[in-house]
Image 1: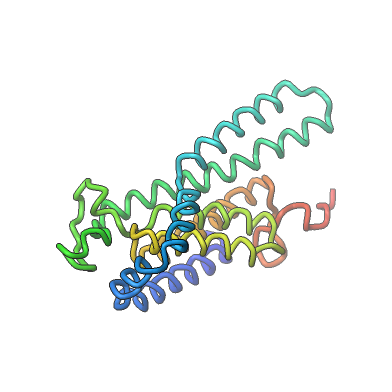
Image 2: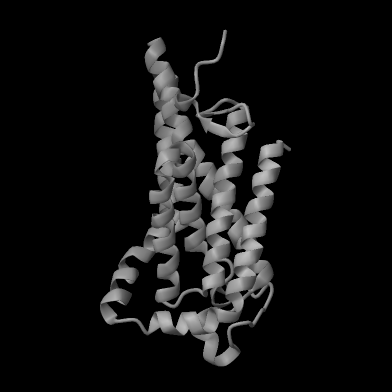
Length: 232
């Protein structure tokens, strides 16, 4: 494993553990207060929360991969070929990132089996029912948060200078999951960081093939446009 990937993975894992442990004791109180916010706030969050669904991200990026790859295969001009090669690798990066995140999220949900906030009155905030095969016991980690963590994490790897903007976008969707009563704060923190890790790990994989990314002198994947051309 690349040393930079191992180091960043360790940091993300440590941040996940710290945030989850710190938030778990406050999950019930924060969740109930969030759901009690003014109606206009709740309505706004209901409108934006479904941006974080895996389906449209996976299917949309998958369709773009197919279309761009077809264009690449039929192109004859050398310059056009290079452009279409990039065109299909870009949605492929999003497709792999969100697809891998989706698989990991569903695996963790199944193993953990945490009851959602809507079951708080019956089971409390800390009820675990592993392998329940029931969406009501699939609170941890938040799938929507993981999806936007992967989506905006991928953008932050591709456009590093806009990372603060992407962070705000991911946090907004994550917080909306608490306000609409779908998840606890610790679910959201775990989901966001899982999605971010997948985006980073996928960038390392692409950098090894020099697809979209190349490693800088510290072994970190950066967009090829931000690095000087390789010496021939």
